[in-house]
Image 1 (cartoon, rainbow, N blue to C red):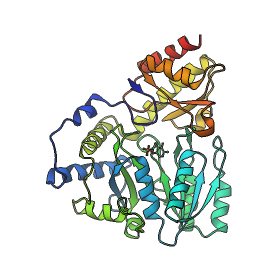
Image 2 (image 1 turned 90 degrees about the horizontal axis):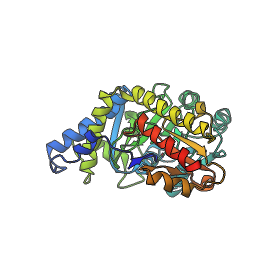
Image 3 (image 1 turned 45 degrees about the vertical axis):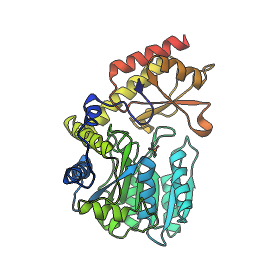
Image 4 (image 1 turned 30 degrees about the vertical axis):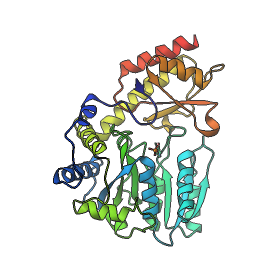
Length: 354
Ligand SMILES: *Cc1c(COP(=O)(O)O)cnc(C)c1O
C-alpha cells in the first residue's frame, strides 16, 4: 500500500530496516548517542547555528510538539495571537484555551490566505508577546507566507511560533529573519520517519525563559535533561532509530532543497495529470505547498467512491476536513513514492471516472 495521506508516510526500505536494530535501554549511553545524533541532525537540516538553536525531542505525534511549543514558549503572563485558516490553526487556539493562555484569534476562511498586513496592524494595536501560525496548512495545502510576518515580529520583539509539522524538511523556513522563536514538527511527515517522535526547534534564549504549564511536555525540562544526555521518561526508542536513519537518508539525498524539488516534480505531475481528467486544484499551484495538494471532487464522484477505488489499486488518499469533506480530496507526495507510482495513480483515477 502506498500512503498519499499527510503522514504517516510510505517508508523507504532503509528506514524500515532501521526498526530492527538491537533492543535498547533508554538509560544507556547507546540511547543518548542516538538522541544526540537526532538533535544534531535536526539543527543541521536547516544549517542552523547550534549556539543559538536547540532541537528538543519528545515522544508523541506532531500535536505533542505543537502543544509543548505553545504551552512552553508563550511566557507566563504572555499574550498570543493565533493565525487561523484551517484545522491546525484552530487546534492551536484550542491548545491556548486549554492552558488558559490569553489569546486572540485572527480568523480567515479556510480557502483564504491570512491578511498579513491586517495581522501586523493587530500587532501594533495590541500587546502580544507571541504570534502562532501554521506554515503549511494541511487542511487545504496552502503554504502560508512567513517572511513578512517574521520580519514584522522581529522588529517588534514578538516571538513567532510556527507549526511546521507538514513543511519541515521540504519547504524553505525563514529562520534567519529574526522573528521565528520556534518551530514544531514530527518525524513522520517530510522527514520520512515513523510516528512516535516529534520535536521543537527553538532559540536557546527562549528555552531558558520557558513557562512551565505542562508536565509531560514541559519543554524546559526536556531540553535541560537532553542537554545533559538524559531523558525524563521512556522515549519511543524505535521511532528514534527510524528518525536518525531517516535523517541520514535525508542528508544523503541532498537535504531539504532536494526534497523540495522531488516533491514539487511529483505534485506537478499529479496536478497536470488530474487537470487532464478535468479535476481541478483547489488552490493555484503557487499558493500551495509542494507537500500536499487539495483537489475538487469530480462531479458525481463521492470521496468514498474515489477512496475505495484507489485503495483497491494500492493507494491511500485523504479526505477534506470539516466542511470541506464533501468538496475536496487531498494527495500528498511525501514518503518513498516515485513518478512511476504517480503514473499508476493517474491511470487508476482515469479508469474510475471514464
Ligand atoms: C499532521 C499535522 C499536525 C499534527 O498531527 P498529528 O496527528 O498529531 O501528527 C499538526 N499540524 C499540521 C499542519 C499537520 O499537518
